[in-house]
Image (tube, rainbow, N blue to C red; front, top):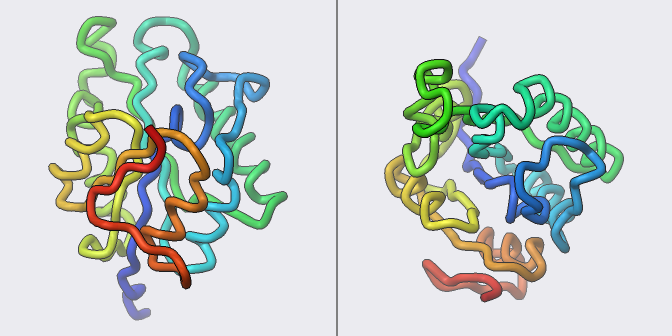
Length: 184
């Protein structure tokens, strides 16, 4: 069987990019999708991009919720997206935090953004074409993780996520300069 053709990937931070950051979201009732989030993911799917979510989840190390809560929430989010004709190809989260139970989650230390571990793990498991891939995040640590993984990083500061994605992938009538920040 032939190897799948490499494709560009969009790595999306979760809290603050896909959904409003309410602080330690781990239940479906805490999720408020940002404007254009579902449409942005659907646009990426239709454009042939792999779509990944990469999120630090220090609430696990802090004892606020467990890994099963994160995984349940991601399944709920995936089901919601599916009902709207969109999907995430794969999800990664990092339960590690250096100040909270560091020994328990030490294996994930290099996954915590600004480290690129989650992105690199996805690149190992999927046929990612790095030169056309990018990460959208809302924090400087997201930009640092993207740079360390060798992909472009774009900062989202609010507004219509779909409009930002349209410009990033060069949808007709949309233009964006490198490093342009959306919102703020």
